[in-house]
Length: 450
Image 1 (spheres, rainbow, N blue to C red):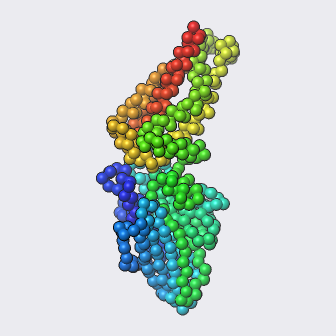
Image 2: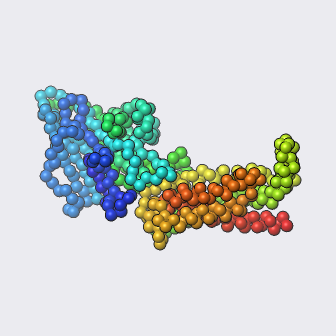
Image 3: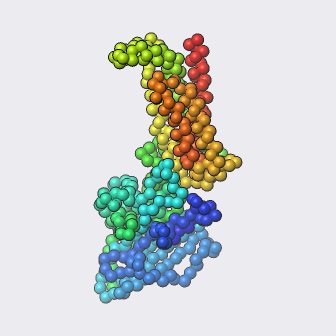
């Protein structure tokens, strides 16, 4: 396979064109190859002849492309089966021995790609591009191009199951052997800046005049969870949620349920953020109460630092006495937030990895939640909300630390100018909810103190 164009997905930089997943040209190589090894047999470099037949789905819901190649009496027939609305492609290899001696070939199927970056990739966040291998015994493994260059890629795995894939942001290609025979799954560099991941399946001895067949299937398409789950065991792991997959998958499931009701991914992000905020309301409230107390005693803390600035031990002792007198836990504002961090990081990866939001509109000027805000409205609101949050937090006694805290909204807003709008929308909503909650709790604590 040298070209796969996805008709339902637009190019990342030119939306007048469809995205091309597999292609072979002067600037990019990403192809699927298969053939026979173990003798002078047809391989992916051989000339295959297509049999006459239907080439479109106009007459039904499936169509087959049959290709034949013969070398020294050994005939290889590849049959691709395409189905309407599916990214899964059936692939069978049939070997007919027309020679005078028994043969014992192996079928190889590999995905070959260069290491070039994708058009439109951001410099402000990174997603994985490279091979992946799965077996029941060793589970899911990603192998970077850099590790292959350094010879750190795993040795070829012998297994009766499993699949191989070439992963990139939002999209994936993969191959799964279906026959319960022994397969060798491998990754390797094949020269000229090209990398391969594939499977080699050994066939039994084929007598003269006999025929044998191996079945498999390909996937070439978007990382849509519903499609991935149907293709192969744990194939949805190619949707890269990082080390927080155990948290991210339930979050994505909840997002899907909300989206089914609202039919809009932007409002889905907003509702999901509200639900998560409600779930962590008690922890957030405890944190904001602690910070409110800290803000009230900040003048006393500053006075202690000035009084004992030449005696650190006495300063620490006075600070501890102040904490006991005011009944303040200096870590009380941090610990509840730390507990929530894994959930918010997981949600970040869900929003970043979900192809379902690619070219999905929200409202008005936001017509693609996976692309940066074209008018930069959300990043500006994001910066303003961070500035307000900084003002609500206790002012650090250290002047340098205080300046750093004031500079942070500017630094973060610069990054968010280039982040997908869906991610920025999540942070904006989260910040606005946090500001409202923190303002109410701070006001209550101030009035109670008065």
